[in-house]
Image (cartoon, rainbow, N blue to C red; front, side, top):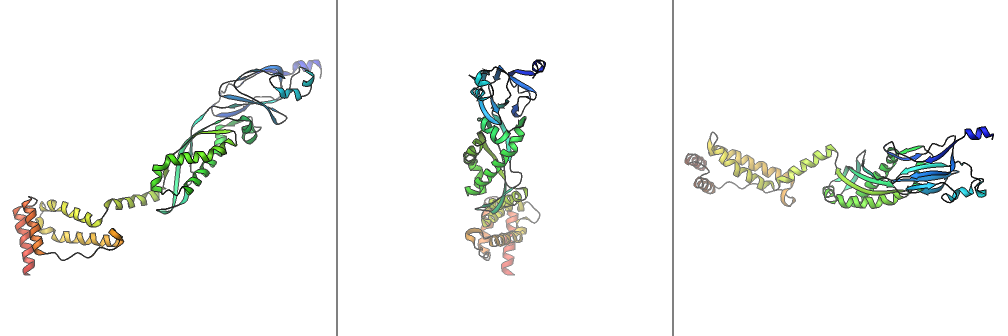
Length: 333
């Protein structure tokens, strides 16, 4: 090499990364047609680490601090050409900076519903969503397993892979938990902890530490949620026999205010009772068996009920006389 070409060569005497772009996890210092000057300054800021790569292999890793690049601070240089003779000339080597900051609030979710066997509903399809956070703790591993020779490696590049691992662990946890869907909400904290424990060694394999993992929501697809809402509504009705009695009791004062008074609701009450018994029989309310047919109405008992309603002020004397006349008419007809 001529003296002129040697002088024209460009040397790097300061290596640093200002992180002027968000979302970057790994950044290779530009090295094309450049050489690092012996004794150059390497500045690694807090929340950063730097990796020297020589001949495709990780040579050394530097944590936060300022370093003069000599054979004392970078022992691998002694194995490079001329360093064993302390020939102080420029050298070629790749320098990659890594961000070790916590990556907070990263979202994960199941792109498609996961089909699982539920102890109560049978086969169900579930969706799950949540957040997690992580940070690079071993840049050497990260370089070898993930980022490799790329000039820039971003959060989005990494999370395309991390989300697949998270969803796989979530599916395994849901399938193996044997917790009914209706009980999952009360166990989300334990589920988050269980999945975090499963994922920690997987993340560690890539030089990444899983800092936090949270399951925020587990839900059914819309059509299954509607079916569940219908079932809940039916369950809220409880014993249909008691539900019918309640409807009857609340309808009497309202009916007394309508045209025809209480005498006109006899047929309606009978129809309502019959409907309630039919529904209870069809749905197996109680002990899982159909309810017995209603017994014939006792006229004496009916008259006593009317008298009780009159005494309690729930019906007027005119309503009482009219209803009483209807009962007596049926006895003589």
